Length: 140
Image (cartoon, rainbow, N blue to C red; front, side, top):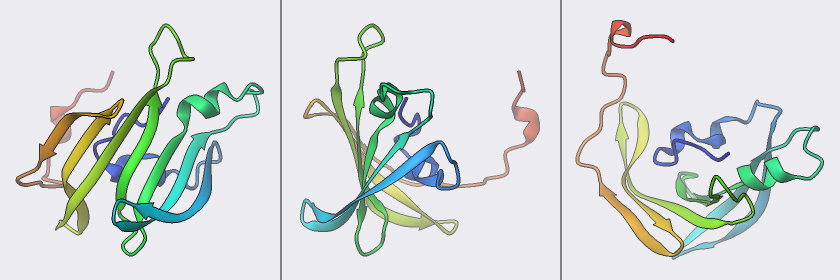
């Protein structure tokens, strides 16, 4: 129930501020590593969820650099398909932002699963809106 595009913050839940089914909760400023960070929790909330299950399964914690407001980290829980009560701690860390076609893009990110680094990526270059033709995609 969390973002499928965890690797690119510009496409995350942070963009859903106008969507009434998303709740943004400001948890304050604190430290994230050596940096000051703004802590925001985002989750889905609907009236047909009296148990709060959707809220729990969709909760994502964003840590934004206090100076630039660029995402430093997003933390959330994964759950096995056969047991939604098992929480698997997941964090994605972002760094080395560079301006690409007017958009700040993280050129370094890590994914941490249960405290262990499972993905460590350094991006060499990035391009946005490169003019892919609509004919390359099919609608189903």
